[in-house]
Image (cartoon, rainbow, N blue to C red):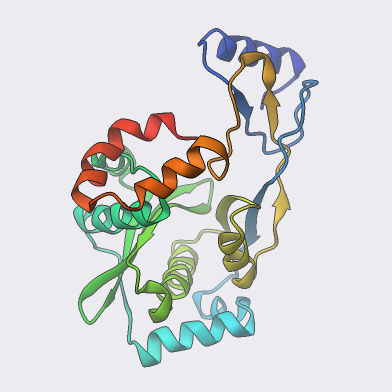
Length: 252
């Protein structure tokens, strides 16, 4: 979290002064503070090959079969010139189906506007129809797909397999050297399984939890948030899309 123990203590003290809780310290490397561990988080990263032609061979056999279905059977196409509105439509629909409020569109517009050279939007299309999308950001030669969404039919079309395959090819074409697939909760078994099936290994994250700040669990799959997510999936899409940006700040 910080360069040394003194810096970490100062950051934690500042966070406590905000009066929020609990405080989850999302460390990439082991922290120096004597706080309880917040287990159950993993991350997925790996080096990219030197050429785009080699990307396909970095996927396990079953993942390559899914990519073949996407390209040969379903003839999916990758659109790197997609607009923000198309991506946001996919994201909002996907978040609702997962029971999670969506961030406001202006948040993503700000990312694209502030980092025009480092951000990109990829939309996968089937017969011209958008079926999956991802907004990515580049940092220190690392491609990071930060936000993704898809329609319900994306699994049958193998759209997500194709989406990340093309994104990795694109990253290599840009001269990037590493792909960060992002963190996941181990309780989200489907997401963890998908990332592992793409040839990534789960690496535990040494998160910590500051109980002094008070509050309950930060796991959205438990307690109140579990019930709230179940209710959210049954809201009419226009309602979820309108209210979600106002409530997302209250969800972990």
